[in-house]
Image (cartoon, rainbow, N blue to C red):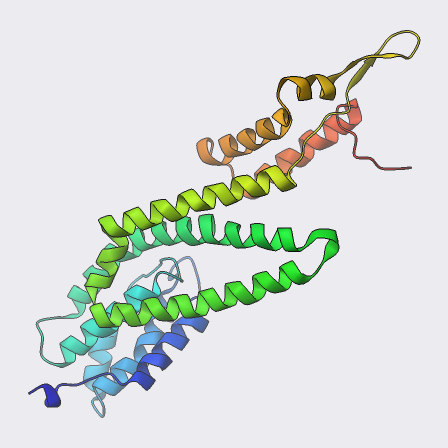
Length: 280
């Protein structure tokens, strides 16, 4: 009986994955998001499982026309798991389009949250922190490192998750959203926080040039020296916490946070609080 079962060939799985990797955001819009990328990645699988049966292909592909949006990188595990479900459906298992839709609708939210925090909030800052350290004195090595390493991680990481999802089905997704996955994500987030903290201490330096002088022009108060005597780097800490408060507590976007910082810097330079070191 096993020999008679329909199996998705490795070539078709590769084609399906590559379509997702390169076209996850195909025809991206607020109405459909990643729907068409998902749909296109399932077309080779549908065609192989139901050859010469256009009616069945049409009916089964309708399951993939519903709204879909998740983190593209970790979301590949959902595509792989869906391929496994589609294969089971082709072999007579009690799986229909609604079952597939319920599965992906229930997973795309948690996977998006995990992926955005793990990839965008942890992995990318770690890689950028390493790249910045390699780019001292204008060296292009850091940029080259980031481009190559990120592309390799993105491709092979997504590929691993896709085929793991296909092999294990919903069990693979269960790892990401289960207790083991939670522990792994927390460990990675701690490491990411340490790296971001190291980048902050190395590359961010906020100082003030504010000085008070007497009638003779003698400086009797150098604010930066006083601050360094109390808490070295305290202005850097204050600015960092201010940015964190804006984005985390007030939900201000990164772009608006940068605009606010530019405004503060401009006013500070005008008032003599900051010195950009420019020569006119």
